[in-house]
Every structure is written in structure tokens, then in C-alpha cells.
Amino acid sequence: MVLDLRYEARDIDQNITSQAKIDQWFEIKTKGLTDLAKAQVKQRWGTMKKVLSAQDRLQKIVADILMDMETRDRLQSGHGNAMLVSGSIYSACRFFEMFQKAGLGGKCAIITSYKPSPADIKGEETGEGLTEKLRQYDIYRKMLAAHFDEPEDTAVNKVEQFEKDVKKRFIDEPGQMKLLIVVDKLLTGFDAPAATYLYIDKQMHNHGLFQAICRVNRLHSEDKEYGYIIVSVRRSTS
Image (cartoon, rainbow, N blue to C red):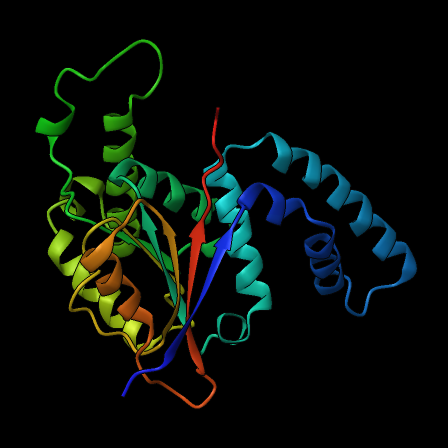
């Protein structure tokens, strides 16, 4: 037996700056505060709104998911967790870096087919900052080193163990591993009953899409009534 699914297509630009979303965020952040403190939070949100309007879509998706982490029952309680399907390994790395900076350090991870190797970055040194390959390589190495609490040069050889550890925590401790960022891996044959939300920021079709959405329709505890599929709508540039 499996659960029903609920589907939502989100225009991230509109969703993150909508008045309803602003009001919801404000209510959460001001519970129990004095009038003066509320006024300070309201002023901060005005600044945040300006910042969000200038950010790229990946940053807006991160902000949107973080809002869900604070407001959606199973995510907020720690009884459930989520997966984010990214369109590329580089985008997955960028998502991870943003979530780390936003306070999900140690509670989110990337699982992809990528295994950082010095051969990947050969000839990538430039005088114009990090290329995509260098940045991807650097983020992955830092993630592995932090997980194993050891130098990057040794941790980089433990990708398989890292994936095993992270999947176990995602299944057994949803409140401690709140988000898995994936591209192609874990979209078939990975059963994690606590997984409740699937965020999709990737073009997916037919059988691949069906397999992916089945990651969140597994029975879990009584408070899991549905699996939720949330797709980021891409605006036309024409």
C-alpha cells in the first residue's frame, strides 16, 4: 500500500515575494516577541525582500524550501524530510553550499555520480576565479572532509562510505538529515519512508518522473498523509 500524492507547481519568483508568504514568515519569526522586536523583524524582512528580488533562481529555491522547513508539519517537526532533484551536479553543489550557509550544515548532503578526482580539474586553473569544475571539486571535498572530520586529501577517497552513512541517517533520523540533493542517483529503488517532499528543479519525463515521485509515497507514521511533489516553474525568457 502507498500514499496519495499532492502536486504543486511553484513560480519561485512570485512565491517567495508574495504577500501571503511574507505574512506567514512574519508570523513565525515574531511569535512571542514585543512590539518593538516585531517592528525590527518587519524592517529586516523589507531588506530581505529586496535581496531576494536580486538573487538568482537557485537562491530563491533555497529560500522557498527553507520556508517549508519552518512551516510544513513533518519538516518542521523532524518526522519527515525531503529530496531536491537538481538539473546538474554543479547546480547540486551550489544548492548544497547555499543550504550550508543558511543553517542546514550537517543536515543536508549531495549524493550524485560524481567522485572528485584531481584529473577532473586538470587545466582548469584560471585567473578569473573558480571555474564550475573547480568549484564543484572544492565543494565536494569540503563536504566529505566535514563529514569524516579529517583532511580533504584522505576524505575524498571515501565517497561510497559517505553515501552509505548519509542514506542511513536520511532513513533512520529524518530530523538530523533533512534534505538530500540528487541529480540521477536515488531516484529509483531507494526506499526512505520518512521522505515526504520531493522538490524538482529538473526537466523530467515519463518513466523517470514516475520513478522519482514514488520516492515520497511510502507509508510511514500516522502524521504522513500524503507525498508532496513540488516543481519549480521556469519562466519564459521570450
